[in-house]
Figure 1 (cartoon, rainbow over the protein chains, first blue to last red):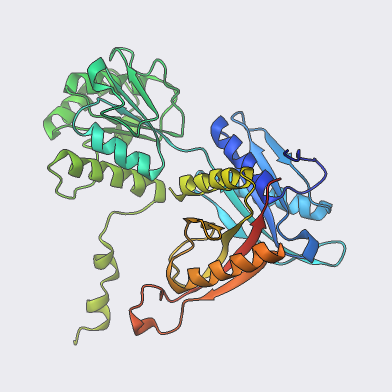
Figure 2 (figure 1 turned 135 degrees about the vertical axis):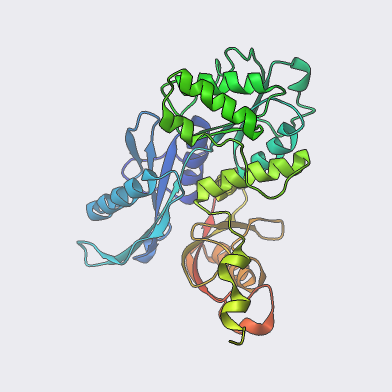
Length: 284
Length: 110
């Protein structure tokens, strides 16, 4: 037996968990607002504010006080704004009854969608690592025998595609990351041009290749009169320079770039940045 | 991408409570200084069976687990103030130099 959610009452933790799991399945963003300080019988009560794919906000459950509900809505709106996880505790709020409350908000955004184009040597370790990082991973190739569960046990989707229309069954949005690592540069290029011609720009396009090949690709894209700003945002060659040589090392370098962009890091070794020995222990 | 980690934790809450178990969930709601996990990190405590997720490991976590047991017993949520500032030179992995507030609540099937 499960209690149903009542619109005029707060959610308990189990109800809230159910809402988060459901929202994740539907690809919706959701914020939970929790009472952490307040009158004893209100502690642990929650409301959920869900944002559907078309941007509509829906409140699930309710606190017993309008000021609290309004404050919860404000916190949730703020937390849902950025795809980077937003969590915070409000300062003490005094509401009409003279009670002091504190609210805690946490937002859950849908998992980022990574499409690895090309199911070769780099794709295998890259699929494992990015799945571990929390991406929903799709691997596509035009060779059926390469897109197998045995090769990609952690992939969410495996598809055999025609590289002339590679993204036919893939929805590309602002939550999409695309890595072009096919067996041939011409396929990478065709996929890249397809992406630049589409009106929606994904969060990330990375393409493998030598300087010469990438230059040639950019010349072609410019000749095709594609948007230079978008060309400039292509990450090619993809990955961070960590001296990678093997497929696993290249996969780490690409995965590191994805984390760096999503967390707004800068790729500088922390020891160098903090420079603790030289700053604090070196005699002048 | 602790996002996924927390979503898996919510999945674990559902699975546990659907089996009829009463568990405790600890959430870091505020931090100060250097702490091992960020605000929002969660841990599920299923006494005698299982721990899912982490709020930082080491001494601080032991304190949280002890409170989780009390909370399951009483049904009343509690806030634990974890202090990791003592003895920064002890080289213990539990010493990070900061403090955090952890909200601990019991969760039963709804």
